[in-house]
Length: 216
Image (cartoon, rainbow, N blue to C red; front, side, top):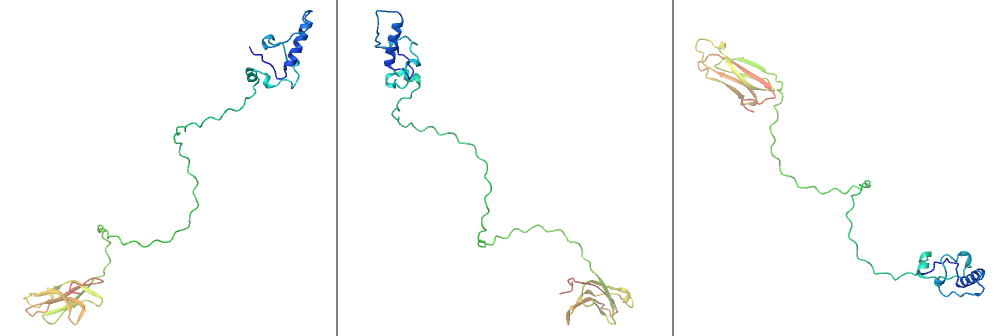
């Protein structure tokens, strides 16, 4: 069994202390006692006070004694590098960072090609009726053909005749139509003719901003 000694213990002090202990014990025949191995020393017989400071080196202690004292040994040979470990699982997605500074505006791109014509849309709702000022013009001639002309700026949109303008009993009308003046196409009206030579009365219905039924 190895002796656990404290750092201040020396071999010389152990020998001197043991000799003194024997002498004081009353044994007259043993003046000196030489210790040659640790088994000759009782556990706990030697304390710190029995060892002078700085006289006991580490090479005098056993391996178990040095281990008990916590004295580090020399560094060992560096081992070989181990194999790479298994890759860990992917971590959770981090939160979005702050928005960066807006960059400068780029140059305008070239105009693209014209797209195809789209399909015709549905017909819209009918608009509100406009206001029209109608004018009725009547004319009674002295011949069998009478024409009622519309005032300037208006166009004929309808017309007719009146039998009260006839004289006699032969009230026959051979023509009752819209009319355009050949000498002035912008002048329109309503013409009535009586083949019997009686005098009829023509009536023209005129309006502004409309297309004439008699022509342009």
